[in-house]
Length: 68
Image 1: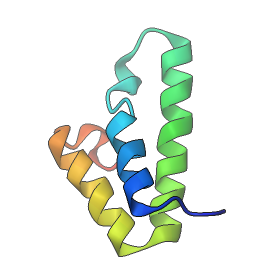
Image 2: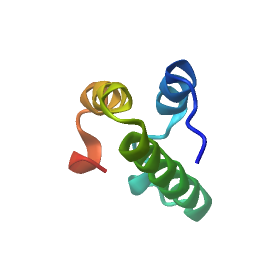
Image 3: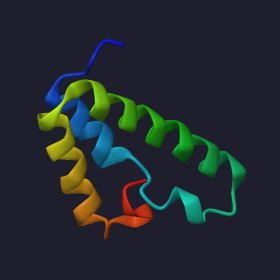
């Protein structure tokens, strides 16, 4: 998998619906699951810099899902 730049990854995290798991709309939930899965894979492949960005957004969003 080709990693996005750190700036692109930051934008992905910023645009991610951190509260998708509480949606009653299946499409919103499905899109949220796909986005969360991609973000997790990028964090695993990208290393510490990607993890720092991810943790920043987790903190800003109240640690929703406690590590999603």
